[in-house]
Image: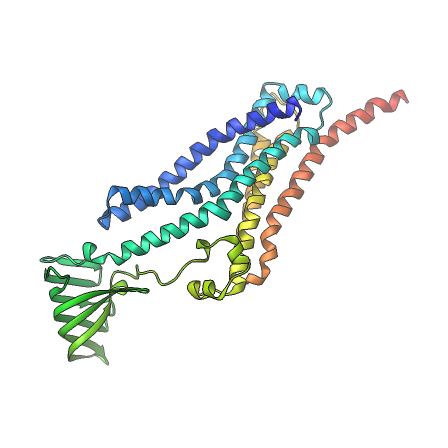
Length: 378
């Protein structure tokens, strides 16, 4: 690699490391604060909070890296221009196409990093996070089944347990369920057991009574039912925290491209949905070179100016917004119709066209000046 390419690439990588660290820290802390509050309110330890925040880090990095690449190239190009290094390179005969080569290499490098994350680390972290969330949701005995005090798992549910036996039996249990104002139910039982199932924890009430107060036609009806055994879904009681199925984002890309029946059954999705998710991952790293090239090529337009390049910076941000808007629109359209997954590659194609057009505009004034100088001499 020529020395000038190494120099520009080193400048971009240094700035990229700084901006990536800052943006990831801000984004991660913002997500970690809400997660921190939720987990501590559920009675989890600091180690669990740290584990959960660490598992969200790969996803945060994959989202932030393209933005960091754009910021690094825009800031780096602006600094090269202010220090007249860019002018010296162009005066030496280097065209915008030639100057864009190290920037393109830098963008591809960032794209490879994003690809490693979205195809490997992010699915692994999401799968682990889902398993840990399911484990915590299953451990409702420590969170909500506390003896001797009234508990409120949700706004419309009241729970009271007199005591918990050494063998895990819940003694003298009381549940008031007011989630449906027209059909309120009070459950009482002498004993209860917590049974863990795939769909979440279930409470088995033994030797109890259910009092159902319903309101119909401006009249109230009270029905009393005695039972020997009755099952009650704790997952529904605590707001549906029980895990009902896996998510497509928990699986690897190769599994999504060729989804088996076990994957489709576990997620409840169709084969078209699985392939759409896989193509969305494949298209995501392509935006990193586009973002880097937009940040570089836009600042080359107009050349050197004493008033700075703030206008070019605004145009660069606008170009990135357009590409991101197309990305969101394509993801939304493909989400509604999975067979439209080719649209997921459209933002990268449009971004590449924008970059080529910008480089062409940056090189065009040089050619015009050269033509005007050689014309009279001929």
